[in-house]
Image (spheres, rainbow, N blue to C red):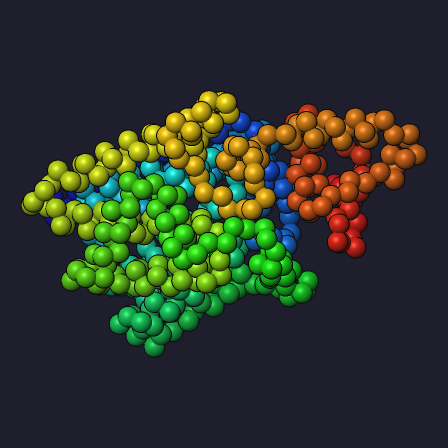
Length: 451
């Protein structure tokens, strides 16, 4: 009992320490460039709260509204929640690792892998629903593992809460939920369907997600229409299954590959790991879903904390007596590689120095959209030019006669751009807005007043 208490204190300190490191890294770098294009759109959504948006579930807009009220709309303030969510992802990973039986080596291996993952470094540095997604996916798996380990059946109610809010954050939670259900059916845990609690948990998830579902129904499922249109267009880079897999290795940091692959193998082959086989089945199913649907390479990223957790336990068990040096070696390799790749996903260098650095290390972040042709990675390239665009539009608007200003409209090819422009106007100093400016979208019969 005393040993277990000591181990828990040690692992808690490790989790807290690595989460604090992640928080500090992001707080030191989140203000160095400019607003990412989508952040300005999210600000516009947060200022016009609704139960749904065409390309966005409502929870992240609601959380952003809270952030705007608490901290304002400066670049630094806008990214405080993402920095905190990034730190919490490490906390959730550490807690899940302990639930899988991990101790003093498993926990730092798993948490260091999240800290050193290129995707998690990048996504914690700007506002988007993606930064909250790992919390819901990892939280759901943690509760599922608790149930596997004998937690009370009413834990399914909390599982439903997590899944419900996960759907309200991003609709991809539906695909993860389907994968979990299918994985449960393929394991002895399918006996859970004979009890009422799992069904009540599902009902809770449905009730929480219901406002957005009703919003979609009332408007003819606009999100599905949008996704269907994107699938038929040439907007996104279409990856083959092998390309999708290899880009996973890149996004997670190649140094973490032995850990998450080891986690997959441990879950499949070891006597202890097979107890949690639902994890590996969930991963394989959701991987297949995104490959079949030609999803973007980062869609699977929220699933990796659970593999890092399993991998940490696997390495701790396998190398407990022999080749023990491999455990610190893996952690060291992850940290060193993260430091090397950090300038590619964190705004540490100036754009000019970044381009030279990328050429020097022969490493580039894979593209996700075909239209991106800039020299800088898309995450960085889309953080420049908004102030210039605002000034250009403001000059043209100011040059119009007063009677024409009342009829002025912003004509845009894609619907996000005017919303981003309006947010830019409100965020970077042009506080005097005209209630008469309208937004007109090509291919859209609607004309919307800017507010």
